[in-house]
Image 1 (tube, rainbow, N blue to C red):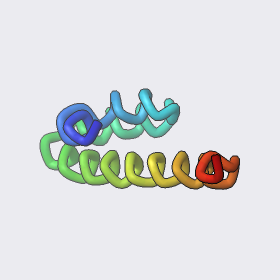
Image 2: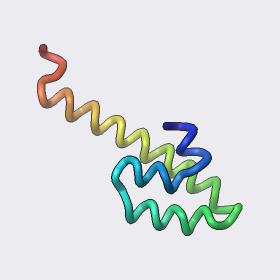
Image 3: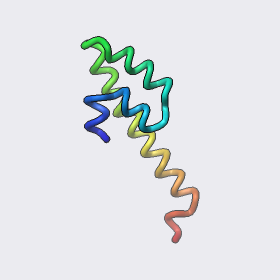
Image 4: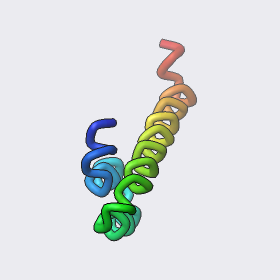
Length: 65
């Protein structure tokens, strides 16, 4: 997933379920200068998505079984 974040950031936003962010990211990465901020933003969003999923499993009791 991290490779996807760096090479195709707008697709990563679609995969994690953020379509409006994907459109904005696509507009940002249309320029070469905007590609780097888009990739950093996608990596940050992926980290938050994984962290939120981990917390949701924790609060659902998945770690107590």
